[in-house]
Image (cartoon, rainbow, N blue to C red):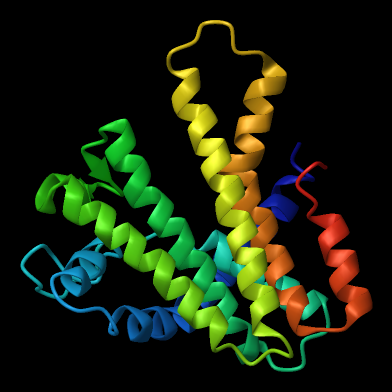
Length: 226
């Protein structure tokens, strides 16, 4: 046990550094994208991301871990990307989609809090919160459409496939709440869609910026049926 402790601590430290670096590099891209939104959507999303309070006063509030964005950046590096900055639109797009799902999920589940703060829909109402989530989805598509890639439409298509799979998983999750006979296989299938799809998409999207061979390999490695 003792011989494993230093290795585990070192791994945890490196993971924390990676996530912190991802947040630092992605934050300006996210803020610029959210800056395209009109009010009150801009104020709502900034609150959700923890950039300011409900009255627009800046603060350092609790934010997400940026795990999916980190996967995108690491996958781009693994695929041989020469310029890490080229993967930032994809990483930010993945974060926008993740937060779009969180906003909608809070409404569907009736959750009052998110990341230790009052959930967006509890302040602005379910209708405005749904629209804010939809706006994040649109921003993600806009980011990818303008990304420096040989074929940005392929990245948008990958993102769209991911969102469809997310919707499938969420629909099953909601349906399971009214059933008492959910099997382990059904549950794992739901999680593969609701959670696994975006993790896989985060790894597959950067592959659209590299060679055909690496792109095919990435798609095999992140196939939804695996």
